[in-house]
Image (cartoon, rainbow, N blue to C red; front, side):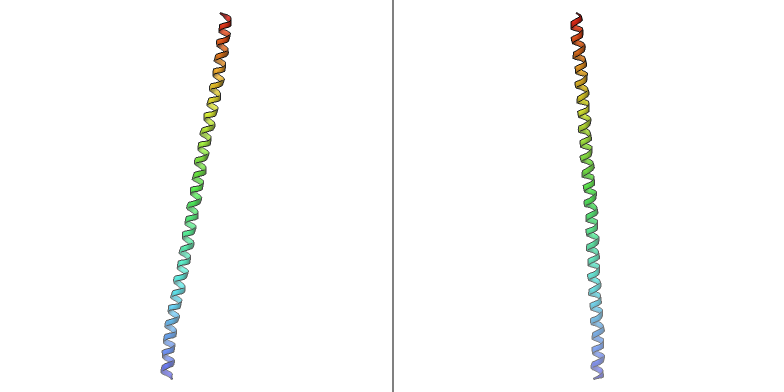
Length: 90
């Protein structure tokens, strides 16, 4: 009976060790998953920010082009007006 109890205790300790190891492995895997998810979310946020900045740069370039076009049109209008005045004088 005592021998059986000692065997039971030995196997119980071994089982407890195995269970603890399994729990620790599970916790480590969960932490790894959380870390990977966080890293992915951080990368996704950085990518979205980069896309936003590139879109903003494109919009600013388009606005600059529109402003230059407006200035060209105004200059052409001034030149045409000057030519008309010159033709009137002659």
